[in-house]
Length: 501
Image: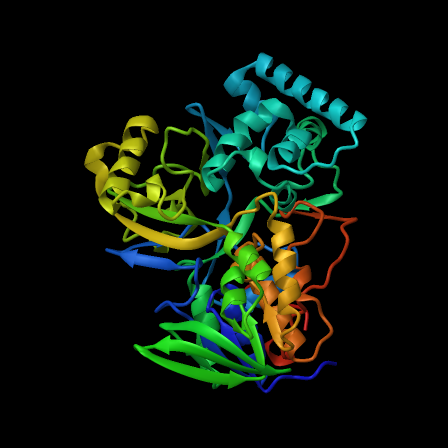
């Protein structure tokens, strides 16, 4: 058992920071959460206007860890709906199911495309078998799994929309996190003989908070405050002074005034590069250069309100075509009826991937909304212009960490510097510069909370599995996981079944 800190200062009220604070505060510890925005949740944000609710991108809840699922059921008791997943890809004015199905490709494109795809994969496999060169780039990783034809059809254009650069300039690590375990072989096998029963799929159905994903961080913050700890909004961290082992003073601006708080542990979920530059004693020039060169992709979310019952059956639709501004869309009503004012109306949430100061970011909100509506009406043919009732446009910085070819080396430089600050921990998507899903960040935060409470547990093991994220393999290597403990008198989940206690 490690020493338990008396006061933990948490930087950022996103899912990882709030989960850490929740685990500590509900177990009797004291935390102070500092958040620069006037709302909790970070990217897990739900907005509402005229009865239309929408998330900044669709966030589903699914996890391989059933203890974590039970924790979620307990936290969100009475607020969970189950959602059937339908994900499709829009490519050259046609729709394809994702994960890829060969029967679907055959129906939409014909036998020549199937033959081209198979030969392309075989050629890639032959090249890989005779070469000892490691797979380094995103393109190499996708081609090794699917071949050139399917890579070009279903991955290249969308990936380059998301990241704003060619796949040859991006690391293969992102592919290994998102699609490892999937390949043309598994696609053919499942098409011909079905699953080999060595895996359990998690992709067909998922849990979702009835009134939007922001209800999760809101519930976490509610419990933290009811436990006697603080969640301070509109509190932008400006500096962290290290007085010695387990002794920190954090300076922040709130209501126009600089304030500070002192504690014996700091958990940072703010962008990793920014953290390195506000620590005192100051970092070296090498660390500064590494911090400044870590890149994030930004996001503009457009919620299109419609006088229409439904547009698509999809939970997600991935837009490959480069002449369409947005890269992904979802229809909130398909996730929960509570996301729209009534059954006669719906909305579409569009994600426009961009970078600060680029062409898309420099467009006005009105220009972005008009361009998106034009794409929906003229190209996708989703509705008539008379159905359009207006749009909301929301801009979000630091949405996605960019895995360029040098990102891992930069992170090592920064992490080595941070090792000199005893009592400092990092977590979350931006905090560790790792492309976590929301459930990853929450589990990471909960595990870090347990670590700070004295348990021997590695919170950094989250989202490092070798298997595909959406299947549970029977031979999958087990990492450290969050263990949910519930008092015996409350050991019921929302369905009335017993849960592990």
